[in-house]
Every structure is written in structure tokens, then in C-alpha cells.
Amino acid sequence: MPRAGCRVAERDIGRHAARGTRHLLEVHAALATVALLFSLNYIISKLGLHAFSPMTFAYLRVLGSALILNLLFRQRDLPPLSRSDHWRVIGYAVLGVVINQYLFLSGLALTSAHVSAILMTLIPVFTLAAAIVVGRERPSLLKISGIAVAMSGALAVVGREGFHGAEKSFAGDLLLIGNAFSYALYLVLSKRDMARLTPRRVIVRMFAIGAILMLPLSAWSMWKEPWAAIPGRAWLALVIVIAGPTVAAYLLNAWALAHTDSSLVATYTYVQPVLTMILAAILLRESIHPTAIVSGIMIVSGVYLASLGTRHPAPDTPAIM
Image 1 (cartoon, rainbow, N blue to C red):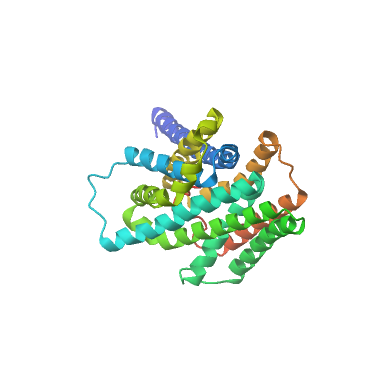
Image 2 (tube, rainbow, N blue to C red; image 1 turned 60 degrees about the vertical axis):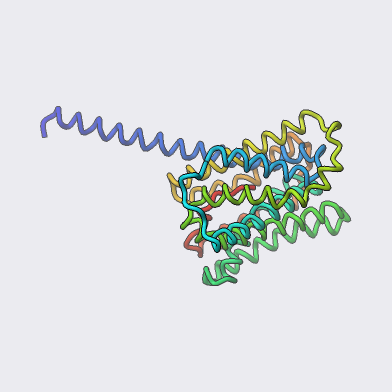
């Protein structure tokens, strides 16, 4: 090959390599931003819950998210859902939006932000357990061992607070575990419909349905809410939670899932409890007990161990917490 041709080929290879490196950096930047947004979700929501009741905060978050998602992704050109699809999406809205938001924010209001983040790492474990129960995953020694290790970690952190008489924190921990189970069940049951109907279409519909279902449930809480006494920083916290950890995190996570392997996306979920611990200690002045650190390590280790025996370690559906 002539020297000129070699130089052209080398330049092309260099450009492709640079483009690939830039694309990989963009993916990592998106996933790092998602991890930061999800970690900040615990901190900022905790600040908002100092002024709002959990029921009111949950409804306003879902309503705001539903409005933004419907504005961003109008579905006029899509055929209507069949009756059976519509009823299934209502079920997903109950599990993935209504129960998810009520239990998450009610639990977060009662316990610390860093413990909440640790317990939320149970979602992949509960997802695997639910998939085994409904017959979508085969049980194996690795999977069962991973579930056992992760649950032991959760029992350690919950048991410590119950043993030390922290009744509110103990109740909050139980609510968060219930939330993790509800969300895991939603992920397992919705997986096939997400692939068939697309996550965007289902999630937009879920939030719209969730806003309708939550209105009568939150009406009394909103009626009793001391609106005039709510400070501006609490409203700012609500706006940030809607725009950041809900809408922006979903969009970035969905983009990353389309441009990289789900295993890389799953890896970044392990960063969230560590990052939340650091942020909670700095911004909320939370004291991190060694038991929480050990429990977090046990849960993450259990999730990793279980994922070794799983064909699809990360859900294809972008998480919204």
C-alpha cells in the first residue's frame, strides 16, 4: 500500500478510536449523572419532607412528573392500548408509582437518608426472587446465596434500629423494604410489556394513571397541609426532585441503556448508596454507624453474587425512584 494510503487509513482508525472513546466517556458521564441524581434524591426529598407531609409530597411529585413526561412524549400518533394492556398498565401504575412513591417517601420521612439508600439496593434481589417465584428465572445456588446474603444485610440494619428502640426509624425501614418489594414486583411483571409496548409509552401512561389514582388518596393530606407555612426551599426541593431524579434521570438512564450493556448500567447502581452516605454526612449531618456500612457491603455483595448466576443482571426498564 502506498504511504499516502497508509496515512489515510491511520487517520481513519484514529478518528474512529477517538469517536469510540468520546462515546464511552459520554455513556459514563450520563451514568455518573444518574447515580448523582438518584443519590441527591434521598437528600433533597428529605429536605422537602421537613415541610411537606409524605402523602402530599408524593402526589405533587407524581403529578409534576406526569405533566412533564406527557409534554415531552406526546402519544397522539400511537394506536390506543387494548383493554387487557390498559388494565395491566393500571396494575403497573399501582405497584411502580402509587405504592412505590407512598412507601418510599413515608419511609424516608421516618429514617435516615443513607439507610434508605442502602435498603433500596434490595430491589435487584427482590426482582430476582420474584422472577424465580413466577417462573421467569431458574433458581441456582449462586442466586439463592446472593439473596440470603443481601437479606442478612438488610436484617442487620433494620434489627439494629429495632434493638436500640428507634421505633420511627424501624417503621421507616420496614416501609422502605415494602417499597423495594413492590417496585421489584412491578419490574418483573412489566418486563414483557415494556419490550412489546416500549418503556417510554408505558411509563408515561403509568405516571398519568398514578396521578389520577393518588388524588383521592392524598386529598385529605393536601386539605390539612399548612400551605402558607411551607418555605420556598421546600418548594425548590420538590421542583428539583421532579426535574432531576425523576425526569432527567429517566431520560439519561434510558439513553445509556440504548448505548451500552445493561451490566455497565447495573454497575453504577452500586455507587448510589456510597455516594448517598457521603452526601448525607456532609449535607444532612447524619452520623454513619459502622453497622450501616457493613450492611451496605453485605447487600451489594449479595446483589453481585446473585447477578453472577443471572442472564440479565440489570432490568431493561429505567428505574424511577
